[in-house]
Length: 92
Image (tube, rainbow, N blue to C red):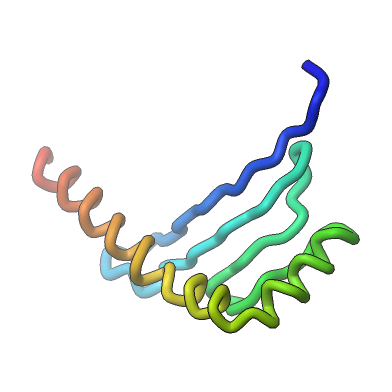
């Protein structure tokens, strides 16, 4: 099992039925350590390692990436939450 493990995880976190507290998180990890994360509440990338700080600085300078990530809370999170929540409620 030699080698490296790199992955990206996107999460949508909320606790209200109107999704008003919806937060989009996207974490970039290497060997199980989170290097950098985008948080829609903070509105930017935050680095947690030496490499991650460099990545965050570069990502935060790129307006195209920032617009895409800031829009993800509506485009990705709210959209999918509405679809999934309605399918669960319809089964109840």
